[in-house]
Image (cartoon, rainbow, N blue to C red; front, side):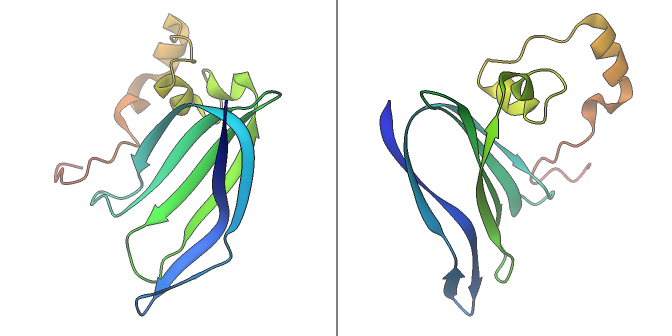
Amino acid sequence: MKTTTLYIGTSVVYDGRQQDNLRPVTFEAEEVGSRRYYTDERGTRGVDETLYRCADRLVVYVEAWSRWQGEPTTRKLVQVQPEDLDVGGSFEMLGRACGLARPLSLDEALEVGEDCGTGLLVPGDERQ
């Protein structure tokens, strides 16, 4: 494990100047993996999630960002349990990106059904 320093809080840029209430957090951890997803079709807003394994817990660093001036970027740490990274968990897709989530059962896959392709935003894809 190595010493990791992250920042929690909010930052925003107005008139080319950054305003923030960011606070550093330092802890010992191993970075397990990360993922990025976009919340708009142009790729100007999104969320980065990074999973860290500490000696006694799992934490996710969540950075909800925007490339637009005047829109805030928020950063926070969330303690999670292994089930949060598995099927149906609040960080299932991060668990998949890190190789921790199990495959869906046939029943689970059929339950997902038509929703399988929704919620994906691909920057530059005009078909969305």
